[in-house]
Image 1: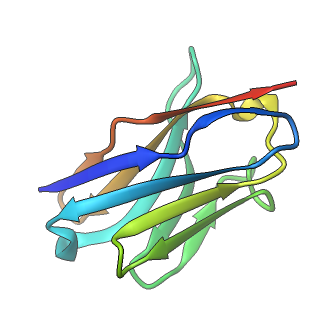
Image 2: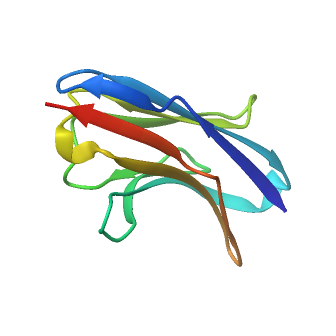
Length: 115
């Protein structure tokens, strides 16, 4: 089992920045990738950014050049640095840990960007 706790959400004006953190605990040896998803009201959950155990990263087209995912293996923490935020980035952001057989989710953290 893996437990995930997100933090760092909040309200910010367009153009501002936030940094989300996802602290992981439990059986991390089985985890192949850590992902950030988001879900806006009335929309499906979408993958925003991913980082593999080896450090490879991937981003949704909508956030490329603005968001950066990184990890601190010593702290078992993954970060999502979000710059140049737009109102359309408003959503609940979820951290996910993915193994070969299971996916684990955090409780989510709200990000609200006002124009």
